[in-house]
Image 1 (cartoon, rainbow, N blue to C red):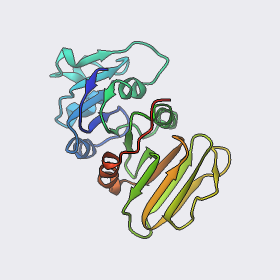
Image 2: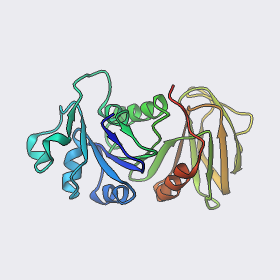
Image 3: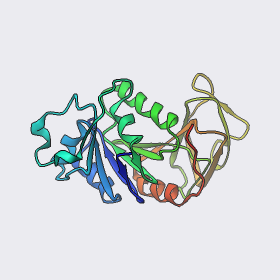
Length: 224
């Protein structure tokens, strides 16, 4: 484990991210980690990352001026993404990931794959429009009526819900079958799921609400 914290950590990738988005996450965090080229985003935002983790194949020395050498952690293997390398080496109750969305659809899908494969590492991905995170065993959010709630499975999973316009009780979610795009909250929601296979996608205005809810909830997934 490279970095251990008892509070939220921000993880910055090399994808689409503004300095305002990075600062928004950093203000809720006890440390900032960069995944490889995400270090350039950190420096541009005026932040010296507490650690830079990755294979360092997309980061020039000039992009990390001022980052102490002892903060650089090179993991050379090519069997995992830089997001995976970084996330699995952060021990924290919650990680806020920014800079992991954008033009590369394959990169974005790989990020979602890691969220499902490493359910013990609770993580919210912030994009320019939405947030995405793995649904915990029980999720409670005091949403307003009409808020979009999308549910996308990365494996066979079932669940129950209250507070959704279209309840999920009795549905079998699968990636090649039933999905839950563009559901809506009717007010406060509660979702329970049978396994760590369901991503929740909400407007990014609810980042702080989801952060508070996930940190407060005792229900967490173990490692697979």
